[in-house]
Image 1 (cartoon, protein in one colour):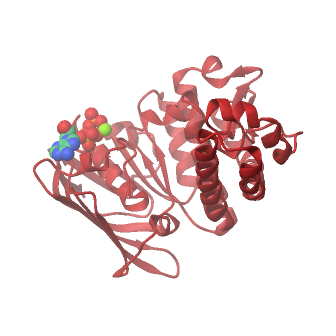
Image 2 (cartoon, rainbow, N blue to C red):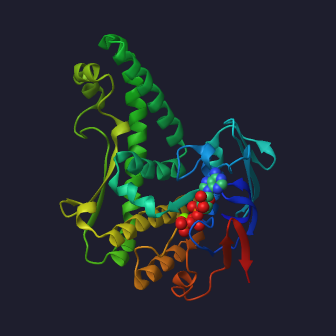
Image 3 (cartoon, rainbow, N blue to C red):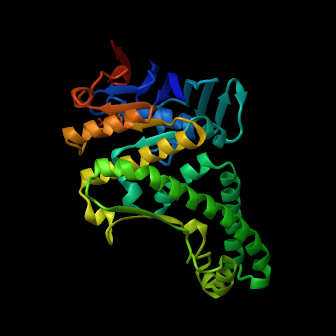
Length: 360
Ligand SMILES: Nc1ncnc2c1ncn2[C@@H]1O[C@H](COP(=O)(O)OP(=O)(O)OP(=O)(O)O)[C@@H](O)[C@H]1O
Ligand SMILES: [Mg+2]
């Protein structure tokens, strides 16, 4: 799966840009504020319908414009997709695949699995469990068709349950929902657990290369004590949940634990090592997806050289190339990437004040 053409209109500081992308490494370079991250953000927007930088999607629409438009051609071995995305300042958006309007944004995500590595990717390790859960669920979503439905239902039932708790409903009134919740929670948990197990197998070799002699352990926690039956736990915690006004345990509290020995990784590793660990996790995800459903991800790596020495840049670029995926990397100085590669990048683009030119 790769993008052959990307067209961007009135997106951040880019008035209009067309990029004919190559299948391997695409290097995008330019000064601070030229528009490099915005190009990656545009690709992400196509795949996810939102930004990886701001939760306010309207902010990416160019100032003084009323909409943004994105087009892309996407090819895999057997099919060719034309994807179009338009977002209005009023909040409406339109997604089209091969000319047909699609309702669910998930349809787009299935077509275009995207891996993002940015200097902010550290949040995966530092912030609360939410971003780590999203990391697991990216894989769960792509590797198992039944995940999306089960997870949507868990969220729906939890919302209803929490409303009942806020209304101080009796446990008899809640019990009906708990039966359903337990059923979906089990599906979600099984898929997530299976996924993290498979991921760990792929991860080992990559971590050995990126962080030799460091014993990194990655494990899954389901969101409640694994020895306790979830239905019984919900009943036992009813009074506590009633006082809190929400459900304290469940799949919405699942997490990925990252440790070196007994320490959380952020207390045991340097910044560069943490960056390498995040990259290892993302690369393992991409490789696993390829193995499981023969689908390549697209890697968006923003400011790849930052925090890394020459040797580790080289290792990272090598591992990324080994995935066989299409890669879009940005850097301020092109040499920081070119000097770390054995063969030149497939395509090189220079960005200046939102204008993109291809370097032959
Ligand atoms: N909605 C918008 N309309 C117009 N310009 C915008 C909008 N949002 C951001 N910008 C501008 O777009 C420019 C490009 O930002 P971008 O983050 O893509 O730069 P960059 O090349 O990644 O820079 P750096 O090397 O510092 O990371 C910035 O100067 C920013 O002020
Ligand atoms: Mg940037």
